[in-house]
Image 1 (cartoon, rainbow, N blue to C red):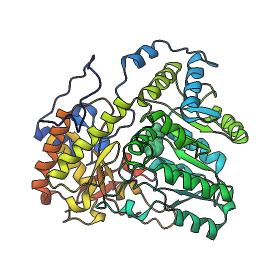
Image 2: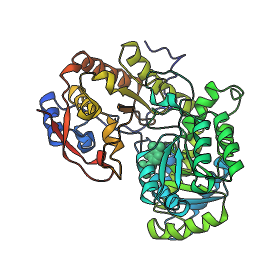
Image 3: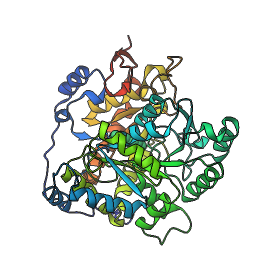
Length: 461
Ligand SMILES: *Cc1c(COP(=O)(O)O)cnc(C)c1O
């Protein structure tokens, strides 16, 4: 039986349900072949438990659904914008808000207004769309995460922290004027959802301030990060999640946000900043790429749901259950001897495909193949986060070879129960027993940008 003192039961009742069912194994093999061994290309209807992503897959509350009915769809000056504007400013403490259709819309705007070609953009590991926009605008991504983050076996707290020595060296070598800004992700998705400590944020702020360098947070999973701080960092045990979030962002000049994660909605995002000139520049661009500065690609109702969702995400019962449900799945797998990234982060359990498929080389795309086989084994959809996601070097054309070669089992917020986690663990365990049957893959179609979304593969002969 589940120990509910360790893993709290769902802090909600279910009012509306969406039936799911599983097609048989033969049919799953056929669907996977048709999808070119890429789980992104499966149809949702053919999936039993969908752990592809936590992005936009959130279940909304009754209050948020109520909020949708209160959409003010005026072209300009919608009251929902003012609600969102006030909520975001209250939660994060920034001076200006620019709404966007989702996180990458904010990344596009920020990269365009804040990067000069040839400038470095140091970050604690990269995120796919974030790095794309930085590089597309002439920026050079530079990894400043602590070394431990690249080792899947090291179980240390705050594995997402910036290595301050790396940042200091970069500033010394390249000069502060050649650094666009520091991009600090809280939590670090590709490192396994690893959090950043408050102390580290403070130190990054102190160091950059000395050199006049701005810091922008990727705020996508900031509430999950705040939970880890409350749980694990000395001095924060008695602070509320809201207080912790507010302090975190006091160490930044602005942020990009994907509302599809910690704002508990299905679509939306925003960009924040304190600088008046940057705000003017962002407002000029948002009308080109997103829409009026008072809707930025969102319907009024979407902004309303996001304002309500952001407040709900700060409730302790919600975020505690969220993080501990993910940990529950991680603990089940760990206890069964399955290689996962430790510690388990805030939004997902990452299988270590290097150890899971120790008979394959990285160039045979072990994580891509493992994700496909998990679907065939039990109708569970996951995502590759390894060499395929990392893409190729823009100049040399060579594959980036990330140290972490992983399959991400991402838990949507408020969607699945502990019973679903049990089923997923059972599927992974079953596959692990015959893991050496998992075959290597090669590309049959490789798109140039963000190839993991639409690439197709076949088995190596
Ligand atoms: C999802 C995500 C983004 C991009 O946001 P979208 O809303 O999907 O465009 C940026 N950074 C991180 C860390 C993310 O997980």
